[in-house]
Image 1 (cartoon, rainbow, N blue to C red):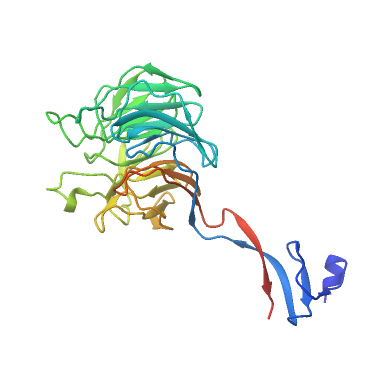
Image 2 (image 1 turned 90 degrees about the vertical axis):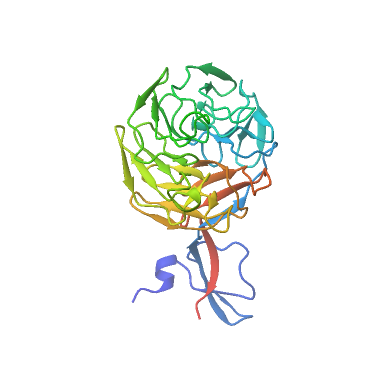
Length: 340
């Protein structure tokens, strides 16, 4: 039988107290506690941790969904009144950068911290659905071509040059629950195939305009209880297909990740109202994971389904809180355990 010394080159050592910085796999005997110990690696569970607060608390905030947990962009929102403030996150704190040209809330976003797109939304006085689109180059916003259909409370996905806009609410004289989908090619918007279910206030997930998810939302209250939706639809670049529902129906959640590995968090759920429920998508089904520490809706989101960022929103009080999600198995830690 191979012995510990033959594997590691030394015998098991005796210590009166545990070593201050043992390496993974190290074994020793604690003569004070009369215990044989080993240093092992352990995977952490799903968890949200506190990040740096926004400088300006806002709900219905726009976000560059393709940003990362350590490099994100949040813009506009309701402070109130509507805001044009843009802030950049570096993994620990937010810094205010140049404002949008148009103050608004309930807009959608695509892209990342240095190359983003902001589109749609609601401007004061409300209701005032917008067609405006603005492009971010890392330092300032520039107005580009408008969407065909003005809307607020819409979903978005994709990049600065290949984005997707879907669902939303029009003006009171127009349909208040939209299925309209538009695709952005870097220059202009083109209407493509509609969602199967008209709705507003969904989460948009995806980093391309050919692969995306429309998750949850708000539908005519006469058709579903409280109007809150659990529906998920998947976009393949041509059409939408209904896939597995959320476990908790909701509207105004935040989202991050891709069409095959997504995360949805917060939102207004059927009970008890504003919630912190988080669900992870594996490409075929949703699984509930760790809740947000601060329950909220109208929350911004970016990152992946294992390293995500949630910021702003309403509790219902408007908040500046930022939280960072780490998925199970993402960040292994080492610990000392007794072998008894």
